[in-house]
Length: 125
Image 1 (cartoon, rainbow, N blue to C red):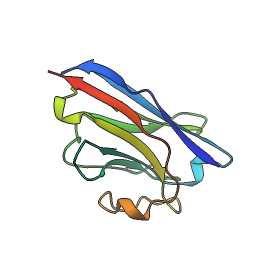
Image 2 (cartoon, rainbow, N blue to C red):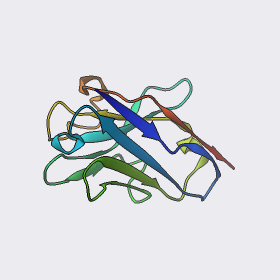
Image 3 (spheres, rainbow, N blue to C red):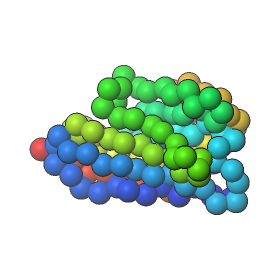
Image 4 (cartoon, rainbow, N blue to C red):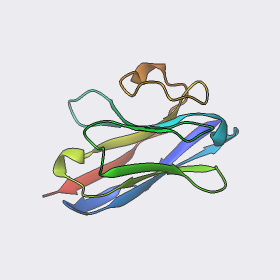
């Protein structure tokens, strides 16, 4: 049972990246899936979440309007489309499951259940 985050890389400010989160050993569609990030010297920050059944989404103010979270048609992958990237978006990005289909508040990073390994996003000015 594990999550796999991928898609990180280096990009210039204003550019775009798409991160992917896939699962093995369980059905991703049954859980709320969140994206989180941690910059050097900073606390982990919840930035987006998509619920498991009705696909309700939630975003932090820092990314709302620039990032979009979605599930693919087969419900096996959750994406984070990141547009208009800024240098302050530089961080290690993680995906994590909620304990059920409903997204917990983004600020409650500690109550997420299963975490994937991080993928590094670097945005240069």
